[in-house]
Length: 150
Image 1 (cartoon, rainbow, N blue to C red):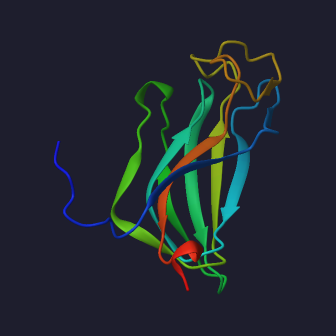
Image 2 (cartoon, rainbow, N blue to C red):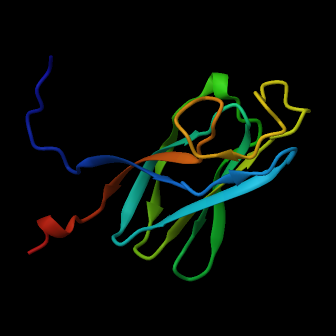
């Protein structure tokens, strides 16, 4: 174990944002489910973790800046439940106060999805693999935490 010689420059936070109200109709082959968070302080995002279960097929994360400009910051066009990963940015993403991070997951609840446990069922949020989630893990730091300001 190696101890730091000085205090860290910033505190890293792990959090998540979700859509607990997700609803996937039977036989829907490309159902979009959205969620979003808004930043109340200047921050940097260091990593994102998209998570769905067996019906998840793709993800997109879009950052909407206070001036209205938007950009896709992460696209996972072929999400695979068996290959979940934390996407760590080489350079942390600068997120000004007032920005929104919007997450859109697409689901395949049809017979065309060989992993689908039951395409005839309406699916809702749940912890079990045969249910679904729209969960985004996020790792970030606040540039100048309010508690550190004088």
